[in-house]
Amino acid sequence: MKKYLGPLSKDNPILVQILGVCSALAVTAQLKPAVVMALSVTIVCACANFIISLIRNTIPPRVRIIVQLLIVSALVIVVDQVLQAVVYDVSKMLSVFVGLIITNCIIMGRLEAFAMSHKPLPSLIDGLMNGLGYGLVLVIVAIFRELLGSGTLWNHPVIPQSFYEAGYLNNGLMILPPMALILVGSLIWIKNSKKSSVK
Amino acid sequence: MNELTDIFVRSVFIDNMVFAYFLGMCSYLAVSKNVKTAFGLGVAVSFVLVVTVPLNYLINRYLLGEGALTWLNSHFATVDLSFLSLIIFISVIAGIVQLLEMIIERFSPVLYQALGIFLPLIAVNCAILGASLFMQEKNFPTVAHSFSYALGSGIGWLLAIVAFAAIRERLKYSNIPKGLQGNGIAYIITGLLGIGFMAFLGI
Image (cartoon, rainbow over all chains, first blue to last red; front, side):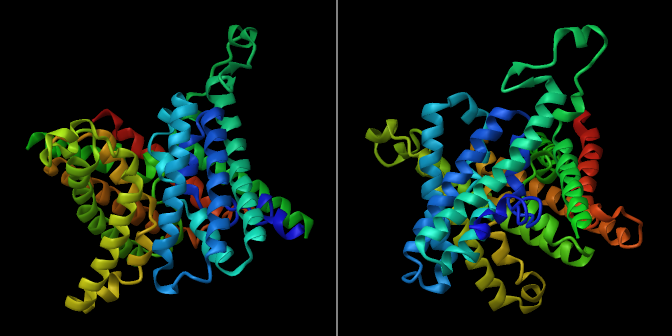
């Protein structure tokens, strides 16, 4: 069981393995798209891991990358269509980043490293856990950025009006893309210093 | 012509793939340990972008978009296959990368030595697929526009990775807090570079 929990903290895909950063940071200006993105990646990652693991013995090694890409993109198309039907506004906000789940390195990385050599059920769990680990970082970053950047959470105002009257201002810098990188950098810092103090 | 330069400059500086959209971050962080390899990867990315984006543009224009099949038969005016674009784009990219690898290996062993190891990496580089998807979203009027956009994005990416690699080479000699060493500082530097690039917003 411990093996599967690794991606949540010790082997976190974003913080430790530095995978899947590409599409992660652009969607974290607000909490809602970040959660939707995290869920989509988790679902695609788990399903793709499961399917690839089912057919792993029939894939010729030379064309495996193409096979993996095709399966992932088919899954992403399904997710994309569902998002457009169910949460249209968020899907508009995420725009190309839903499509970019295909090239998300977490998914390709897990397919290569885990699903190609393990049974379907463990692969499913592994995909799920990696997706959740990715989602965790996304949500943490998004909470900070939305709270400090626009004073809201899930589009509900959180900072009381009296704060603003007392001269509190939203930090506009937080909404800008570069701050996402700096926040993730700080998260890595916190994580690393915790690890070394445990040793 | 003016419009084309406009698109080019915009995609190099303002809509920079790395700093504005975080595309291609994985290889950006992994292959930026020294300037020479960073430059090689940057050239390879630009090369693939310049080939795949206009190709995907044509596919999108004449096969996938709404009413794109009208040239075949006027009954198809309402057919909209754009939901297939993801799978088609990625297949085109993977196929082209494979093809390029073979062509380069056959005709220019020197170039192959320099770019060869990067080419397989590029098929799954988000910047490549991202550029195609942005191209689809931006709805360029002609192939030339999409070409200019692809070239600009490629050069922008090249610029970003070379600048970053140069900074990283210097970093080896500086005192960084222990927990921040390695990836932590890499993210923060990218963030700071991004803030720098935002100064171009006014152009």
